Image 1 (cartoon, rainbow, N blue to C red):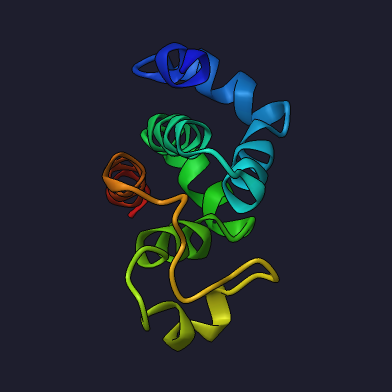
Image 2: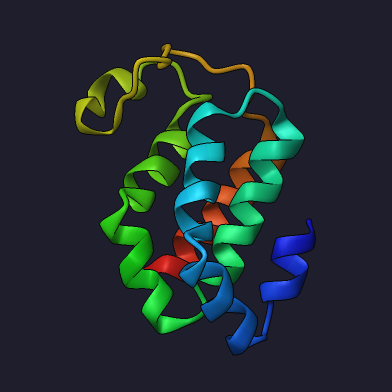
Amino acid sequence: MALAHLARGNVLVCKEIAAAKGILVIIRCIEIGHHHAVLTQACLALGALALHPNNKTQIAEVNGINVLIKLLAASQPGITSELKSCQTATDKNHDSRVGESVQEAALVACTNVV
């Protein structure tokens, strides 16, 4: 929550987080996170960082868009099996970690990235 709050509307903070490899760390949290609150906050932080144009490119370069799309599809049985290019070793057809709050935050992040 702190990163999302700090980054929202503050270009200098967005640059500092990105320079400290924060975008990659946030994306890794999404990939390996097991708790919906962690996933939600990671998506909110990524969404806030994506408001800075240079960060959009960095998010895309470290596979962030695919990770967000996979997260959006994770709670929908049958869809993740169709997204082979987005899958990781922990994929299942239904991911109980992903509730509505996670999907909402991931959708906001996707919207801000593109």
